[in-house]
Image 1 (cartoon, each protein chain N blue to C red):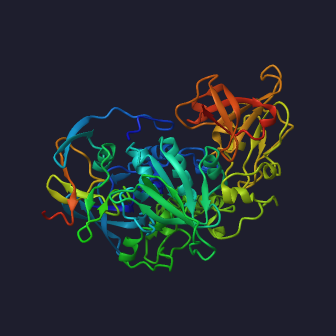
Image 2 (image 1 turned 135 degrees about the vertical axis):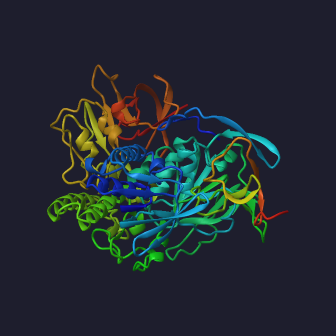
Image 3 (image 1 turned 90 degrees about the horizontal axis):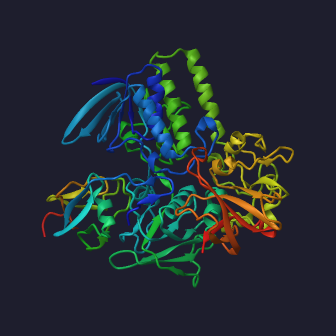
Length: 102
Length: 521
């Protein structure tokens, strides 16, 4: 899903590859990119399930407005993954409901 | 901390306001919730319309870089990761920075908080894979990740059309553009860029449902009648993993409401000509004061900043009159033509010049051969010459400005361009690359340059991979239908073309006025 070469934006500038943990699985992404972008590149598009109806949600606005993409990041729930930078060793977990515990 | 002027929002309007104010000597601070300045400007990778003074034919991303250089050089202080969470009528703001909340005060405030995308509920609309068109743009143009592989776009306004084209540029497949309205809402030239590559339009169609249990696996659209009611048995199914919604924008005016600004019924603040709200020295500029193009937002920002500078005594009444006169003139130019805010719901029937607007263009996204021959830019003939397929009154004139031989006339900014046959087109191709609508082509049948009985057609080609020289391929017509085999004779790339490569392909002469796209086979 990565856009390596683009007709207008050119070749992607080299970025630092890092590893992070998604639901117990090790994945790679670029340091500093939004968590949501790294997940999309790894073909993960379900970010959370809603509290009442357990329906899946993913990226909707991608600019930190709608909060549809929130997940548990390093143990903290309700983190907007579209505007939160990915860091080495981060733990990213699918959020169920308000994320207050299983 | 206190400032002469605080600007809320570092998008096109906010940065322009900050630059203008700082140039008049004000001490300016800009606050933005994001980690990077620019708002939505850096994801606009297409060329803007307008005139030189509106930065026409520059891409949004390059305008953004230029604006940041301007604010930097003028010493504007930009606070990033700093959402403004409170605005008060005595011109104080409250800003959240990390885990703390800070308080700032200024003599004047310009609110340039922009807009957010509208959403449209339908069965399955909350599934992962349904997203705003702007979200798709952020994913591909900023984060450089494809939002999906196969996409359906709902909405044929300029956002839907422009983002649709950018999806193709990112390597996604665009299966269709649907719109409940009976005609394409955005510029015809934007639609035609898509149609000739094979993207179909479904007007008077809306989404019935998104399919999929955990994420989008398909979409069903259906026809609606003039009362927006579904017509049974008109459903069409597409296998897609992504559905993009381009169904309009709404002003992000929460702060203005909070401060107690008088609001109008449509959710925008009531402002005077300079953008000043009902609250003294609090201004609104850009999309928050009414949805328009980024080009207008940038001028609005400057108008408000000049007014603030005058009110605070940084510039004299006389120099304010001069500056605001220039800015008002530039803004009113952009607000002309058939897509101007005041004409939003007017029927599109005739151009200012009296030509019929193509019905096919409004319904299907391309002009038919019978229709195109009406227009003044379309003059088939021998030799090398531009063929200008610009058929709606849009404020835009880079084709005239860039031609070194003066071959193209544009009477006033919204007039249809006219090719003057008494000039000497050299075939430089600058107009082809400069046209933000990609509506200009060159035809060349000069003996000695092009084989007997053939014609070379030059098109703008902003896709990867570029064709191989003498590569075999197929020519396509305006509707995206294959026409005939065509080989590529020339590929041009240079800094003068502004990242719009030109591809020249050769077809039989009778295809000269039909072939408008090329694909490899």
